[in-house]
Image (cartoon, rainbow, N blue to C red; front, side, top):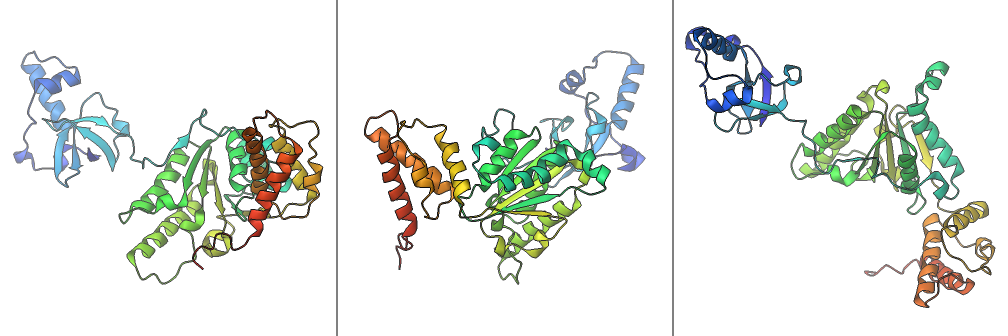
Length: 374
């Protein structure tokens, strides 16, 4: 494997020092050429081998002038391409796909989440804003062009934990046919210098090659905090990752149909250069506390998939004034189901909900419950 730049051999060495590569039956079989013939064939074969050569740099740093098989597509041979060499003759026998980190993966059609917008209770304004910023530009780009505006390049979802940020992104991935690439911010922080920025380039390259595409970077605050005078090599490397991210977001063409979604719990720590219009054009807030209407939507959405007894009254839970987020409401319903299983019942009764509500709300109200070291 190495990097290849295709050139004529005349540009590589002086004419009086040229030597034809060794002929081997193995290479002849790979090229599909006959091994027998007259002097005319031998002359033609020698001329062909002198012209079909290239310079390859191996992984050890050595440079070689190698033969290129006639069966390869020369249009794919470009500077910095990765290639495979024959074990004995060093002939160039294959062109490898661009390298990419194994942790970067694109969700296939059968791997996308099964969460839909109907499964997300409430958040009507957040749904509308993310669809306007992400889905609509990919499906109806002509609308923005006709009005004379550029669609948003990126979207930031911010709010406390458990407010539905990741769940809404799952609904976006399910509802669109665009390629979906998910990566966590901490994955960009690698052991060796330069690996993190390379991963950022790989993510955006993969998105451009498979456009229309959506890139979702969760926990973006792991690499995008405000810059400071770094004293250690690790801090400087994280800042280089941020600089590469800023460059990629400002550099990719709007016509490439690549949209970026970022999520964080700490929007106040993000670098101002990332938050400016032109990179993250739309910031969508997810409130920690839901009003009564939002609570009703969340309770009914979750309860629709569960087996409830006829006498269950969800309104008795909805009208209470305790601070509840979407995750806490989901935990209440989950705990009620577990209590029904514990008592060998096939449906949930009102007492299960009451006990579950008390345990979950009481746990969230005890501020010092997890302060083990104080």
